[in-house]
Amino acid sequence: MTTQPTIETRSIRVRGQVLHLAEAGPEDGPLVLLLHGFPEFWYGWRRQIGPLAAAGLRVVAPDQRGYGRSSKPDGLSAYHLDEVAADVVGLADAFGRPTVQVVGHDWGGLVAWRAAAQYPERIARAAILNAPHPDAFGAYARRTPSQLLRSGYIGVFQLPWLPEAMMRAGTFALLRRALTGSSRPGTFDEAALARYAEAWAEPGALTGMLNWYRALRLPRRPSPGPVTPPVLMLWGRRDVALEPGLVEESLRHCAAGRVQWFPEATHWVQHEEAQAVNVALLAFLTGAEAPA
Image (cartoon, rainbow, N blue to C red; front, top):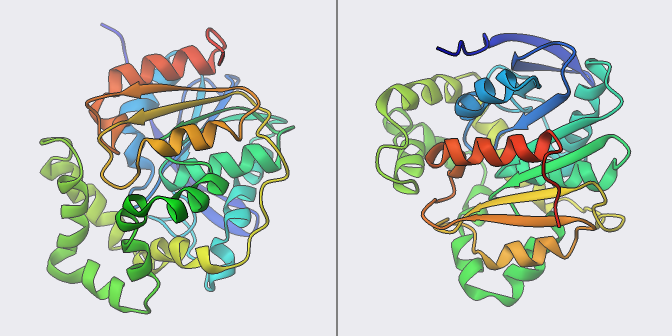
């Protein structure tokens, strides 16, 4: 019987913020950062941490700023994409690593895209799960009405205080339905939802989580050029929020990128197809397979 590596949690200071994180694997192993999206926290990678660590990787999954037990700074500028992308480099510095590999899902994927574009000398590889390149999304949505409709919730999230009140009602009933209603049946059981509810109940967490969306209205420069580190996109075709057409648009921003499709998976591909996702990640992160 294979013993799964122990997952430990702690908090560290990164760029003036406190980031709570889970970590596992040999301390001298190649560092891999797992970046969650909305409305998760490090626990969203529970099916990946053990297998990746068991393969010899040093795996670190932070609660990104605004989430869980991490700092929840005031003001939208603290959640600008460039700020959260800089946290990736800050984590690398905190662990004394000149380069890291990143794996991002949803908002964590946008962070991974931006970090790979802005800091190519620090990002060795980037695996992106159901998250478009930030520069690809806007252009695609503007010419694709169906995607614009799917993204209508982003406009609702711009309102002050009302989204927080809606999410808090009924012990986070709306957030629970967001997970269970957009995933395959049984993906999020009651025990998992209880863990998420604990994270959502942290003081300031709902506002911190929503501020990622609200910061989208702040000016942002396009990426400086093609993403030069190798990129692997893993994409569940049954995503109700993001259309598959975003994949081709995103790959146009890559110097070396490819996609692996999961036809029966939804937005929550790392939960629903955990074993296949882990196999793909290990092949990519260990260098056994490179993008075409």
